[in-house]
Image 1 (cartoon, rainbow, N blue to C red):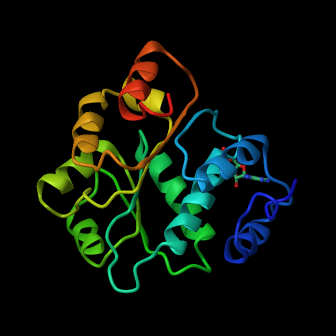
Image 2: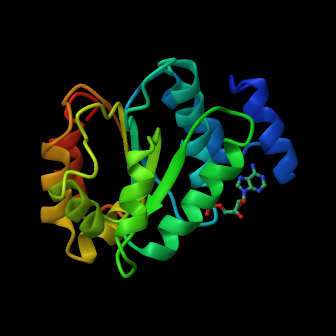
Length: 204
Ligand code: AMP
């Protein structure tokens, strides 16, 4: 199985080749075709499995294929538990979108919001964020979730362990119900099962 066999376009294949990847990892082989088909995905994935490319590549492909020529509303959101993970995922998003006309950004707490607000104003297709700062920015009307097509929860179990349940519920409540949801979690405690049942009911 090659990345091309998974249905990825040339712009993404070029970026993947430049990263030095030759074959998809098992999670990439499984997840990429489902995500490209627009399905919800609930995946058990530890760090180091290649999960980031597993969701980033197909979501970037979707965004570039359905891009409006004029408008650039926020259409994909990746939520992560920590700023370190957010920065790491954002680096991947930037690398994989090198040959696409896609704008990305990252926002997390602990730094001033002003430059994040300015970036969001310029138009972002895909945003990587930690829940607390993202909610602050939403309260300040710096970002809207009304046009979100794809929601990705990365390391969902850690987000819940860190007390982000309420923030996640609030963020999700501002999104359209009609969307694709991708949930990645290393473990499956009951609270993950419950959140999955709530936010991706059809696929569950
Ligand atoms: P992740 O699990 O997403 O944190 O990825 C772990 C590491 O594997 C990262 O350094 C990636 O750059 C790398 N990686 C992801 N996919 C592949 C692949 N198909 N082949 C080789 N390395 C990969």
